[in-house]
Length: 100
Image 1 (cartoon, rainbow, N blue to C red):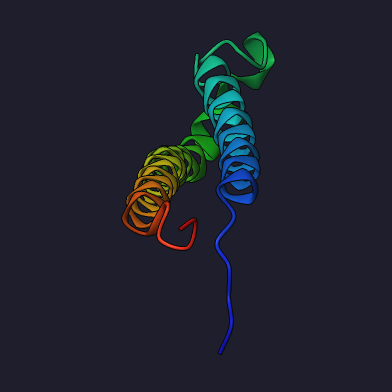
Image 2: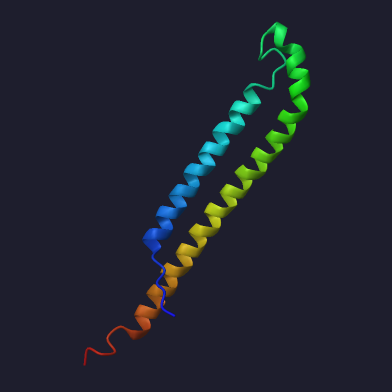
């Protein structure tokens, strides 16, 4: 089995994950902005009452998704650093071995 972990690809993946987290946070902000009872106008107050339970559940899911996205970015970044440090350590061990 042959595999290679590329820190550059991991960094690109981390940036994509960060973008997803930004989008989730944007959706979370939009959901919070529309939670005001008059967000739908005075005639929409009854509609807000009907939708509030579903919105509450959706907001909880969005909060969980935002936390998960942030956690995932942190873990990928930590893994990338570990790979980089391991690569540097292994290079230092073998550096100059065949330069005699």
